[in-house]
Length: 179
Image (tube, rainbow, N blue to C red; front, side):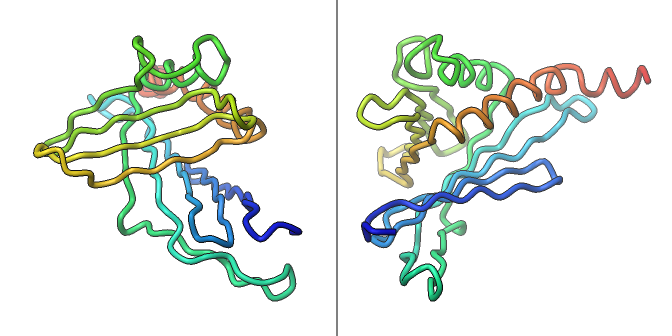
């Protein structure tokens, strides 16, 4: 890399229903985004869990002697994406709407003692989509705030995964029982 602040991109794949995107940089200000598919079981609907973690240590050195960046998965933010949340996400990824939510302000989730705002919007400054998670406690204190720039290539892959999963999120258990 010629620019020391350039972001590196890496995706990992697993046959365990999980995909992760890592954007590390030499400043240590990168992030990682992970999605895990949970098919429906019993009375539980199918969903995706989306996790975001901030970069903990910078990626250092030239290609041969590089020290890999680490991410703070211990202090990650995890959100559950329902069938309709995934449909909203697809509408943005397919550029049918500019951002998540009917008002364009994102998806608002309440979970126990926390309020979470999930954002996804077309990035007008750089190619791709900006994913954001902002989490506050009931007193309004910021618990987590993170952003991730999903490249156009990553967005194509995520769109395909979400599109393929919708049927199974809704009917997975029924299809398995009918077979």
